[in-house]
Image (cartoon, rainbow, N blue to C red):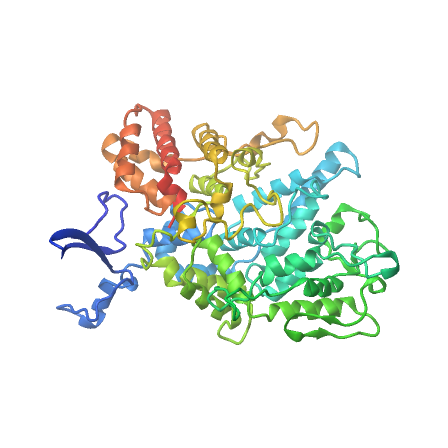
Length: 602
C-alpha cells in the first residue's frame, strides 16, 4: 500500500512505503520496504513516456525541493524559521539556499552592540565609569538573532559555542565585553578555516582567563613553578583531537591488546603547556597583571611577553619538535603547536562528528563521519579545514536529507531546550514596536538550564558521548541532550511554553541601567504573531492548522494519532471571535510542542 498523509492541506509526499506479508513458519508478519527519496532504489525504472527520466519518480531528485524537505533542512541549518522561510527554500532549492547563506556577511558585531548599549548607560547615568555587565551581552545576542538574517552562520556559531566553551560561571561572569568578543570570533569564523578559528580562540582573553593560561608563567624550578596545563589539556581533549586515536569514520584505533590508543599523555600535556606561556593583557605594560586596565580589553587579543615565555625545545605530537628559538618567540611557538594539532589525523573526524551531532543527528553512521572527514581533509581544492565546505557537506549528505535512516530507531536527536525556545520565537514572527529587542533570557534559563554561555563547565551543557540509561545505552548509542533532561527541565519547558506562547510573554525585558523608566523601553516589549494561522481555526479546517504547525515546528513528523488528539482538544475551545481564534492557535502550538514526537528531531 502507499502511505500518504491523511491531511492534504499541507501534507507533502516524501517517500512511498510498501507493506506486504511474508509467510514465516505458517505465520504472517508485516515487512516494510521504503522506496523513494533515495532509499532502496530498484535496478531499473521505466515509464511509458520519457523513460530516461523515470528515475526521478522515486529518487531524491523527484521530491526536492518541497516544503517538508525545506523544513527539515531549516531545522538543521538554523536556530529557527517561519513559514515564509520554508516557502523560500522550497522555491530556490536547498543547495542554492546554502550557497546564498554562505555569501551573507556577518551582521553587526556583538562588541559594537555592547558598546552601543554601554554608551547609553554611561550617558543615562552620567558616569563614565559605569560598567558593561553581562546583561548587555545578552541583549546584544538576542537583538542579533532576532533581526539579522544570516541564519546558517548563527546556527553554526551556536554549535561552535558548545564545542569551544567559556562560561559566565567564571571570574569574568559579569563582563559583557568578554562574552561579546568571544562570540564575534565564533560568528566570524563559522565559515572560515578551522586553523584560523583555533588561533583566534587561543589568543582570546576570555578563553585565556577561563582556562587559566592568561599570565601563565614559564618554569622556575627554584620556586617550584611550572606552566599551567589547563588549556593544553582541553585544547587537545575538547577542541581538536580527543582522547584516542581515530579512524576517518570516527571509530577508535586499537593496539595489539585491543585497547584504544591515547592521542597524548601527561608528558605531551607538559610540553604543550610550555607553549601557552607568556600571554597577558594587551593593554598592560608588563606580564602578570591580574586584570586589564579596561573591560574593553577582553575583546582584544592577548599579547605575548617573550621574557615570560618558556624557552627551549618542545616535543609535541607525531615526533614534531618546536625549535629552541633564539631569541625566544612565543607567537612562533604557538603557531607551530597549532599547526601540529591542525595537521593531526584526528581533527577531521573529531570536529566533523561533533558538528553532525549539533546539527543533524546524535548517532551519525561511520560512513557519514568518514565522508565529512574527507571534506575536512580536502575541500576539493586542496584546502584542509574549510568549515564552509564541511558544513555544506554535513547538510547535503544523504544521511541528513533523505529517507536512508527512516527505519533506524537511533537516528535523530533530542531538540535542545534553548533551540526549541528560539524556534518558537522565529516560527511566530516575534516583533517589537521599535524593532529593537531586549531579552535577559532569565526565564528560559530558569525553565531549561540553558542560555548562551551558561554551561556549568568547559564540558558544555552535555557531553557528546552521554548515554541515557535504557535502550540508548543498551545499544551503545549516544543522546547528549538527555543529560540535561529531567523532571525539572521537562516541566520547566512546559511552563515556559505557557509563559511564552499562551500568555504571549516571550522575552524578559529589563532595565539597561538602574533607574531606567519602564516607559523608556515600552516599544521594545516583544509579542508573538499567530495571525497567519487564524484562517484555519474553524473546526472543519483544524486539520489544515495542524498540518501547517506540524510542518513549521516539527518538520511534519508528528503522527496522525497525536494530531487527532490535539484537534479534539482544540475543538472544545470557543471560536467566536479573533481572541478565541488566537487562543486556539496558541493552544494547538502549545500541545504540539509539548508532545514527545516534537521533542525528537529526525
